[in-house]
Image (cartoon, rainbow, N blue to C red):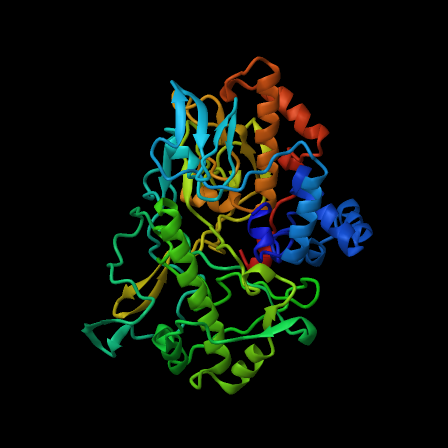
Length: 501
């Protein structure tokens, strides 16, 4: 779907929405143009321009409904009639991508079409094209020692969205031999700092509303299993507090359930690890299982007798949005793929790239094509047993890490020369698991896509250059003419004093 997760529920953007940051000055190029078009649709373009001109912090002007984003993006694409959009996956075959040496010549789609091109840009969340093109990738979390990252690998002490009360994980309380309740993985905690192939938890970015005229009441899904929410019951019995929907300034009174609002939200930890390598059928199974769990969870919140009445009543006020996803019974069609393959090239974005120079960070890279202005942010990867209790493991966020905005290097978008000279990626840049957490924001993907397209344009105009040989000064000039923001010194820094450090 053109528009990615922004047309699948993500309407509460990561722009100016944290106390310590104001990252809107870093948005430029196509990322900014999208928001200008959205604001024009809502009749608030003057307000957005006021925010930009006067350095104001108003998170609500950056928020939108997914149905509106879908319409705006479609209308935007329709302005370019020469643009051909083919809706198909790569064929599931190890020969789907053809090469001559280190030059990719074609790729075959599941609908039978073969696409020939001079250059290819991988712009999916999964990065399926890259390994088929013989390009090095990695899935999961590196060891802390790989890049000397203190936040990498298994977390010795996960604080964000951690259980705040003791919850027994066993089917028969206190009896490990009885097995584990749903949602708890049997794997051992492991060694802090060691790596694995676990991914940040996926979820649906689900919009709900309390506007009666636009509301489909919550319903019990087919396949609802009350046992899948035993962990939530035990958390409540232990004194934990579950969350309720929050309106976040999205037009027409909509929520955006991000997946990590609380200890037990809609992120399904450890249950999406197979996604990057899965077949289309297996991915469909994961989609459906996650949808059933998510619909069941909010039904549970609104109806189960174990949930306090005031909380049930609050959830019952909300329903699915009638003007969202009418082709899918008003439920998102795609998951939020927070983490999948990452390219592994000669240059790698790491924790040090995203760390302030005064606290040991790397020097600024001289080849920026966009600015990453977001903390190192990866959702929990596992829900396991630790010391006999349920434990969420892996969140990296609000860690008293002195992160900084940084220029995303063009070098992170191109593969190793011996692997391919005519492939770039906008969404799976060469990065560590921690480094990717600072890059994976939607408006930044727009800007990286714009950089990739311009690099191809320059390479074609100069006789089919290798993407590694595109002259940066020409690329930079072209991006600046298109409104890109490339000077990290002009966008400000986070204010950690508001967080107490």
